[in-house]
Amino acid sequence: ICEYIDKHYTESIKLTEMADMVGLSDGYLSKLFKQKKGVGFNQYVNHVRLEQCKNDLIYTNEPITQIAYKNGFSKIKKYSISFSP
Image (tube, rainbow, N blue to C red; front, top):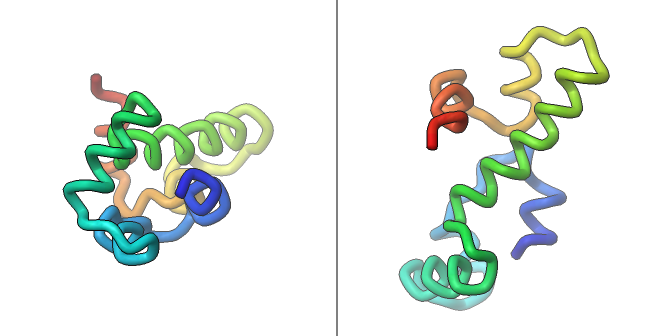
């Protein structure tokens, strides 16, 4: 699952779709993921996306909104909220 997220972070990634992909229920996958990774599924996806955004902010001159969209954030508000604890 983590490999899939790492390769497809620019796309929409939903827990329900991942659960179907691996043949588990949403609830069980969510619990198992948090148990194994120490963070929730959505937190992990956002972390991967934010790491890519960070690299783009450092190494490109692209506008922040373009970077956010390019790295899988469907709305700027979701990008901004990702910085909240």
